[in-house]
Image (cartoon, rainbow, N blue to C red):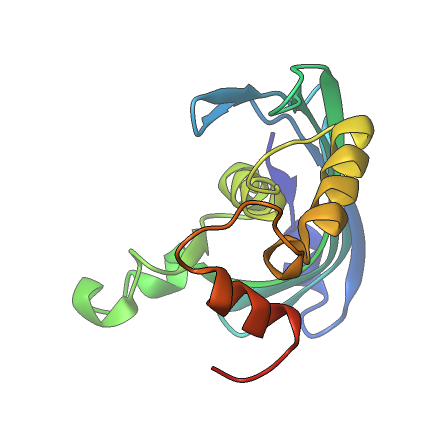
Length: 174
């Protein structure tokens, strides 16, 4: 579904509020499927300045997947600010394609803007490397606290590097 920005052409230079929902299909990320069970939401303002449409506001979505450790269902709340500029293709047609930068620039045509690709980019870039449930993240935090000073503990086993181990234990420089 496209965002209708025709009012911006009637009132150029004026910030106009909008709310737009986008459905993001399931995505394979690092071999795991991440679903977006509810429509993602763009809320903010848009404004037309010459041949550019400025959009800013907040993007929210809910991502669902499996815990990387125990495979329990996990949800992650995506909530990121956005500030994007879309160039009007009708105005760009007068510029040579190599000068316009169309490949790298967000664009729109007519009086509607497709926000699907922007929604996908914002959602995926905000996701953590791995989805982890609360139980596993708490256990992982406890384990890392226990292991934080493991290299400095006294070892009952005598090994060739025991002298170095003692230096580390006494916080001396080597």
